[in-house]
Image (cartoon, rainbow, N blue to C red; front, side, top):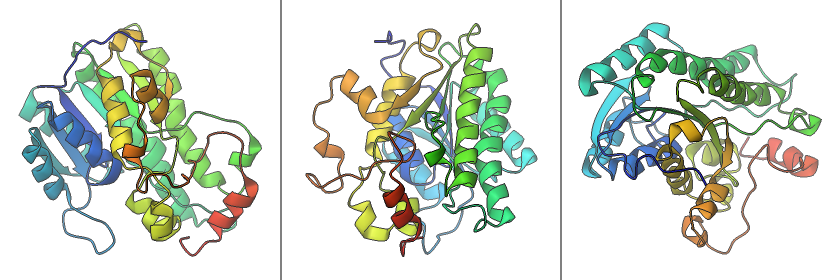
Amino acid sequence: MEVKMDESLKDRTILITGGTRGIGKAIGLRAAHDGANVVILGKTTEPHPNLPGTIFSAAEEIEAAGGNALSVPCDLRNDEQMESAVAQTVERFGGIDILVNNASAIFLAGTLQTPMKRFDLMHQVNTRATFLASQLCLPHLLKSSNPHILCLAPPIDMDRGWFAGTLPYTMAKYGMSLCVLGLSQEFQKQGVAVNALWPETGIATAAVANLLGGEAAVQCCRKPGIVADATYEILTRNSRECTGNFFIDAEVLAESGVTDFDQYAMTPGSPLMPDFFLGKPDFAALSELLHSDGQ
């Protein structure tokens, strides 16, 4: 087990892309309980009929949980807006200790069914924004006593089944994973931890509800809190002894002593939907998912 560097995230500054809702907001709230400085980057500034919350409501929740919040309207595809977001973070809190590359775009379809507009969006939000955010934050992370970059990205499995039927999405998500491989090696000597975290099961988010089967699918998921708790365990480890890993949320928590995973289930005792990119591809399940009403 890696040595703990900080038992708390108090006064640490954590920048989260896509922190308005779901996993990103849960990570921010968990850090807020320690009194962290949490910066929320996102595009939702007005209520959306299909997406809960705004960057401002997320900031209010973080403040209420004990953190110091900064919400920054930001299109991750826009270089100038990203540069401004990092500059605002440093001006407000004096630096950056942690970057969480959480934002992701998803469109589960095959080659002939994927418009290039969707293809470009996934690569811009998933791969390019992960690289850009890391590039912009690294000069500040290098000044931190325990700097971390955490990407919500899967372990790379070259089984062709994970590419069949969802090639554009798989390429974009694996682009995030490649950032972890490269950055962890490039900045290891400087003590910057760069790791990936991926859920063992589906997580109850707006993406699942809107794209992957609706409320029935949501009830077969775990809550975003499991990813937030696993994130906390990783971010409080010594960055110089914990880098280049592709963590799975349940494994991280089991290693830390958690035994009750029903607490994270949307419906305790119900079968859980496995996440993409883990184990052997289930072609029948993938086909059913891609042709469900949720798609």
